[in-house]
Length: 318
Image (cartoon, rainbow, N blue to C red; front, side, top):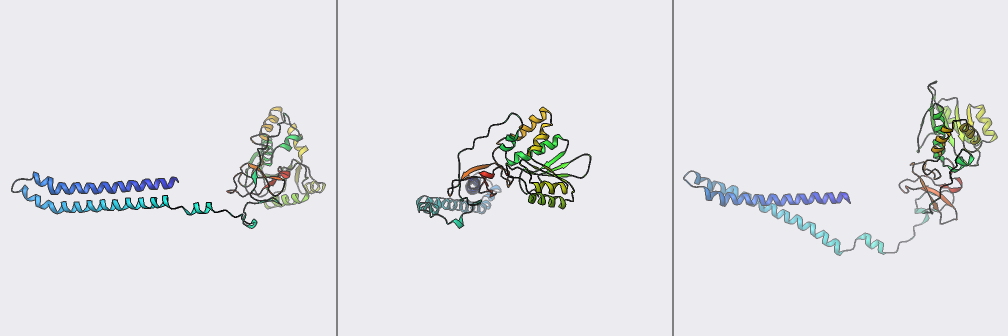
C-alpha cells in the first residue's frame, strides 16, 4: 500500500511538471510573437520582430502539445477509478460465494501424531509459581531453551568461555566450551526431559558428534536421568553424563550469589513457554478440533513451519 501511494505521488508530480512546462512554452510563444515586437522600434531593432516569429510559433506548438498530453494522461487516470467504483472486483465476488471446506490433503499446517491442522489458540497459559531456592521443581517448570541457558551460565561461572545458539540446526551440539588451559574445546548436549530417561540411542548419537569433531570427551546433561545402559555406554566412551540430581548438586556448591544469578537465568522471561527450535520465538498453546488434546505451535505460523510439541512433551528438547 505504501509503494502504491509513493508511485501515485511520483505520477502526480510528473503530470504537474508536464502541465507547467506546457504553460511555460505558451507564455514564451506569446512573448516572442506579441510582447517583444511591440517594444522593438527603429530600422535595425525593428527587423528582429519578424525573426522572432518562427520561434514564437514553435513555442506555442510545443506548449499546446504538452497541455494536450497532460489532458490525456489525466483522463486516463480518471477512467479506471470510475470503473473501479461501479464494477465489483473479483475478490468481492469470491467472498460473496460460499467457501467450500478444503480437503485434508490441501491443508499445509504441520501436525504431530493425530493432531488436526488449523488449530485455534487456547486461553493464555498461567506461569508456574517460581521457587525461591533450587529444587527439582525449578528444572521441571522451565522450558528447554531456559535449561540450555542455565547450563551455559553454570559453565561460565566455572571459568569456561561458552558459545551457543538459540535456535536452528546445531549439529547435535548445544554448547561449546573453551578453556584457557587447553586449545581443545569441549562440547555439551542438553536434554530437558521431565521423567523419560536418556537412553543409549541418544548416547550413541552424541558419540558420533564427538567423533565428527575428533573429540575424545564430551558432556551430556539432562534434567531427567540416564538408563543403566546409557550410563555404562557414557562411562566407556569418555562422555560425562550429568543427570538432574547431579546438576542440582553442582549448583548447590556455588555461592549464594551465584545460585541466585542462576535462578534468575532459569526464570527469565516466559520461562515456562517453549521456544520454537526453528526460529527462536515463543510458541503458543493451541487446541486441536479433532481431539481433546492440546499442543504448542510456533506463534509465527505460517511464516515459520517448525514442528509442534504435544503438551505432554512440552519440556523436551526439540
